[in-house]
Image (cartoon, rainbow, N blue to C red; front, top):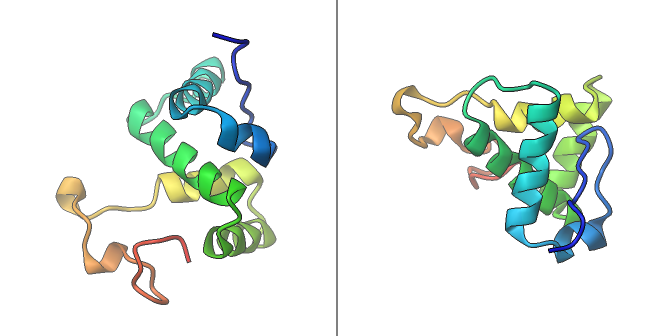
Length: 112
């Protein structure tokens, strides 16, 4: 195993390095960051998994994810706050997906 991957949600990870890293390394880097910063509210595993999924969509250049991130930052959120808005989006009771959780624009269950 090589050196530990570093993660800082305020700085976009290098897309090539992020996408080349195994999922487990990405998740561990995100967990380590949140533990180090003592950001332990909620379920860390779920929080880290959503962080990783969004970072991966951004690194892959998914237009909807990139547009959503640009919009959130344009509205005054810093990069970590923008990521957190995906991570902490409200869920209905029981955490089940419903039509109200889907993208309001095209109902694709994405971040459009």
